[in-house]
Amino acid sequence: MRNLPDEIVIYGIPYEVVYHDSMTELDRMGTKKLYGRLVPDDSQMHIYRGRRHTKSIWRTIWHEIFHEILDSNRIDLADESNDEEQIINMLSVGVNDILFRNKLDFNEVKNGKV
Ligand SMILES: [Zn+2]
Image 1 (cartoon, rainbow, N blue to C red):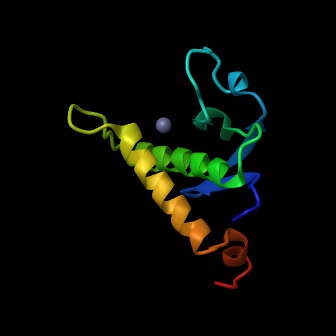
Image 2 (cartoon, rainbow, N blue to C red; image 1 turned 180 degrees about the vertical axis):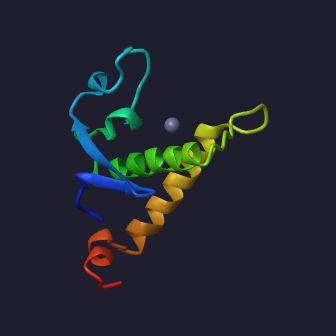
């Protein structure tokens, strides 16, 4: 969990995780603060690393994972009563915090320890 992944597989599709030291590299339009972006056509997940703590970076990775889970299921939460970004932030912060506080480790799952 503490190590940052080079690849994340979502619903069987592998995405290369590309880390950037500058936020402007992520946002081609340069219009807003962007911590992560998933580009399905390139099978890449772009993540702003900078000097961020590993836990914050993982929170962004979860954020992008939840976007892709919703998109893959054609679920659009953005309407007048729901803010999709708010819901995704709640899920990514919650899941990430539980994994870190309980020291749940993806590498242990991969190696059959859990
Ligand atoms: Zn988002």
